[in-house]
Amino acid sequence: IGNVTVGEPTSATVNINNTGPGTLVLSALYFSGAPPATSGDNDDFAVTDPTSLPFNIAPNSSAPIEVTLTATGTGERSTFLRIETVNSDPLSSIFTRGFGQNSGFSVTPNHINFGDTDVGSFDQINYRIENTGSADLDITSEMITGENASEFEITSSTVPITLQPGITNSVVFQVQFNPTGYGTRTATLTYTSNAPDSPHEITLTGLAVDSDTSISTTFLSFERNSFSAFT
Image (cartoon, rainbow, N blue to C red; front, side, top):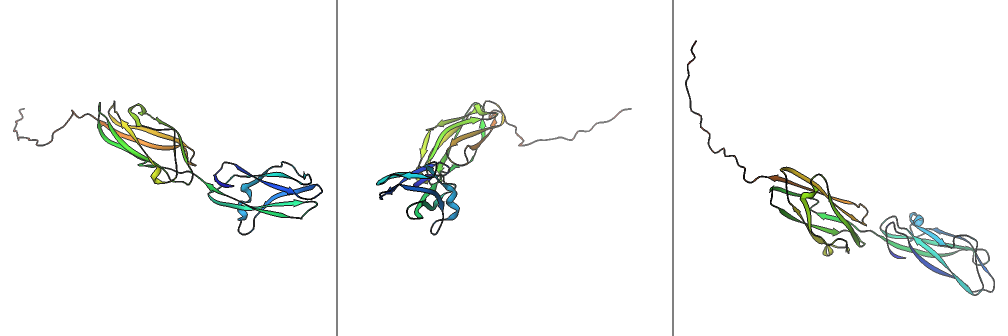
């Protein structure tokens, strides 16, 4: 069946040929593991056509059997398709396999802290998103939410975007902090993708300050004074 995305059904067909003069009757279709197949993979496979048995194949003709793989994990998934008939060989086997793949979402840094930023000015930080899986990563949406969401902005975006596996296919984005109020400002940057742990959240923080306000404590002098109390 080839490479399949984990959790997504993928189908393939195999033709059963009746080379004899009589009707070939398929009485049972099921999966059973044996070396090199892994018995635990049987549940990943299903016969999706024909939908009922027994199934007849006319003389000197063929019929397709549709097998669907819904991989529950990555790597090789394998088993044997067992075919039982009424009036031919009692049991035939077809080795069946596919390879489960998944995309992976990784962002660096995963917490973006702008530090001190003057109110009325702005600061920008780059971050990188990488596909750490073995299948294409489809990033479909991005949004900033939270108490101070209006003070943060994605200034370089190519979403929606598809990243192939590998660090060479990563992409760099930029987020900007424009504080309009004082104190700690927070928001959450969220991406949606086809990776298993979607949605992906990135914390945004910054400390908005006033650059015109300063306190000098270079030197404080206190002189001794004497006083008298009168009664």
